[in-house]
Image 1: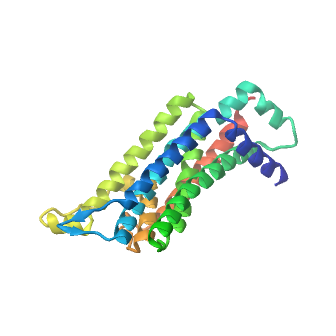
Image 2: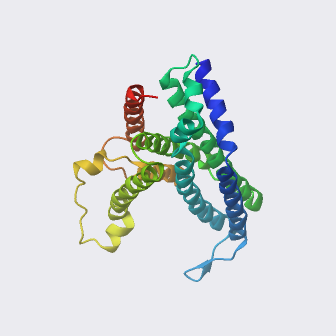
Image 3: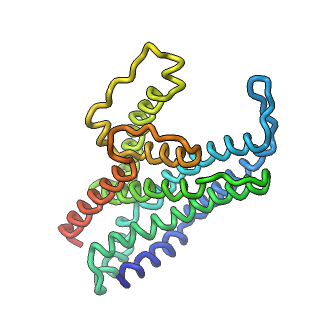
Length: 269
């Protein structure tokens, strides 16, 4: 356990030394600063001006999803070359020359990257949360809890990218991961739209057909974000299938991590 924690700590420091990390951090801070102006705007819907609290609620919900989705790219960029970089600069040999199991090395590198991204995302969400509090004097229930829920998606992406990077070039593993996420967003997003009350009211003649088995079993990254949104909105999640999306994504994390450890143990260093 001590070795695992040391690798986690080293990974956090290692990732924070990368120039790309500070570029992404700067862009994120710039985005949050730009968003602050949206809370001061005057918005009119159907000829009726919205009050500041309503505006803040809608804007903060939109920004929440933008930050959560934007973190996907950050996780991919930080994860896709972990193993290849360690192999090229000799860090891998240095790690494994010590009393460290290979599974500790793998889990430590992934956990460190995930934890850094979790803190990154939670800080951005907390900044929006505090901005709303300062601007309106009100809080958004469940906002920070929803941020922690979305962190499971970051772990899934980190695990998936690292696993694919064992067999594919770093860039190709990143592209494959984006493709997997894109398919899930199209499938689950379409399901959400077709089964929404608005769509059923607007087009009552079109009945949504039951989803096929592969769509039910597919990684529910989009559904996890939809569940996070339901926490903020305090609505019921329109889930696909009977398995909760968090359990679905957790299953894939465990499965892919197990496959990665087995593959890495067979890999010659």
